[in-house]
Image (cartoon, rainbow, N blue to C red; front, side, top):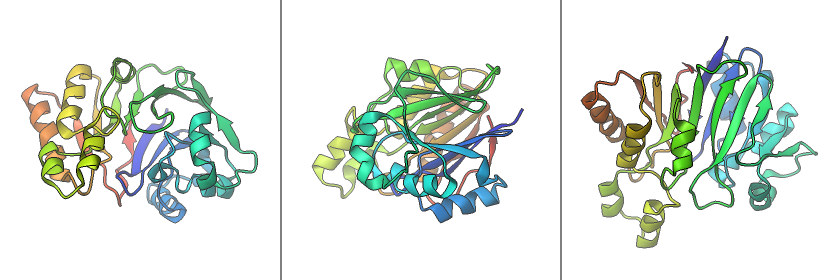
Length: 262
C-alpha cells in the first residue's frame, strides 16, 4: 500500500508537509502560498484532489498562512484545536463551515490515514506534533515533531517506533548566541517553549533510535542561526558513531524533499 511523505517547505518563512496513501492525502500546515503548494504537488505527481483536509499544528503564520485559501479552493476542512482557532481565526478568513476541531491525545482518521495529535512544548496556544499511520498497518509510522522547545516524555513516547521522522533541528547554539538577534529573542528560541537545536535533535534521536527508523528529515532550520550542512553533519556524526544506516535529509524553505516511502 502507498504511504508516502514529502516536506514541501520548512523554515521560519513557511512550513507545509504532504502525507499520502493510495486514495487520500493530508496537508500538515499550509504556511506557504497556494501556488507554491500546488506547484510542488504537481512536481511530485500528486493530484491535489486527493487532499482531504488541512491539519494545523499551531497558530503561527508560518504554519497557517494559506490554510483558508487551500480549504476554499479544494472545498476541504481545516482541522485544528479550539485554542489554535481562537488565535488564528482572523488569519484563516471565512472557512464556510469547513472548520473541524481536534484535541491532543485523541486519534482522528482521514480516509485510511490514522493521525494522533500530541502536545508539543512551544510558545503557542495549543501546539501539537503528530504521528501518522495507515489503518491495519502497524509497521510504518510517520512522526512529525517541529516547533518544540524540548522533547517531553510524551514526545519521546509518541515518536518511538517511527519508520520515518521529520524532526526539528532549528539552530546551532553558537551561531544563535553569537548572532545579531536581540537577547530576548535568543532566550525565547533557547527556552523550553522555543525550538530544538542541532544538538538537542541528536539527543532526541539517541533516545528513540531503533533498527526500523529508515528516513530522518531535519526540518524547521533557522536561516539566520543554522546552516543545512551544519545540521546535517551534526546528525550524521552521531549516526555514524552508532553505525546507524538511515536516509538523512535536510528540508529546505524553498524546495520540496523527494517523496519518501514511510
